[in-house]
Amino acid sequence: MTVVQGYFHPKTASGASSLIPAPPWRYSGDLLTVEYRTDPSRVRELLPEPLELADEDPGAVALIWADWQSCSGAGEELLDPVRAQYKEAFAVVRCVFRGRTYSRCVYIWVDKDFAIARGLHQGYPKKLGSIHQTRPHPYGPAPRIEAGARFGATLAAADRRIAQAVVTLREPSETGGFVNAHPMAHHRWLPSIEGKGLALDELVESGAASFEGGQPWVGDADLELFEAPTEELARLEVREPIAAYYRQVGVVWDGGRLLEVGTSGASAE
Image (cartoon, rainbow, N blue to C red; front, side, top):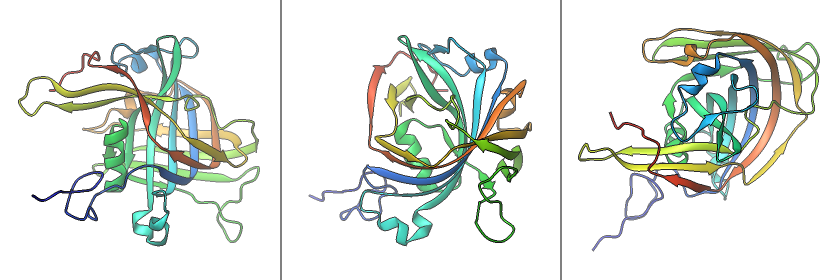
């Protein structure tokens, strides 16, 4: 009898074709974060039961661009960069579960298949997109990390641009923002193959097993969101800017914790 191996599909006799390896997953990245306030009712409509709006600043949103290099524990992907490098953009809000405040990713786009597979496992609602952001560099025309430096960021999905921002740094900051500063509360959903509800319905908590970061910088952002036929990011309309941030980070992800099973009320249709 053949025994097939691999952490994720496709499973084979050797396991070498698996789309993603087993955790821990390690990340190095440059993050541009734009925080703003929207109508809290637009946040509420994205929170399935039993999640509730955050008590303070319930309409706060963070739209984050990230330029990542990632790898498994051994780090071999870093020497085969096509397997390590990818970009993503994601929208984060805050919510409350059993009296505790969590961050929650409500939309996210990535440009590599392995990043989508990791998202399926973690509960991130990942879709394919086209993501670009200005990279800092100490020489030539690229911006340095200093007061007055300007960074652009764009996001497109299904050939339509749905977000763009220009961030201008002002000064060093004590934090990189507050919206994405909590453990994540995500749902892992999978429709039943028989078409009767959900075969998988879990609310999970996850976050960084370890974190290190460079000096955050704070500044201002010009952010625009655009309508598109298959995207709803623009419903989180910008009502009031909060701040923008730049930071380089290193993160290790190594699993999460089950919070609740089968009570979200989510439809499989």
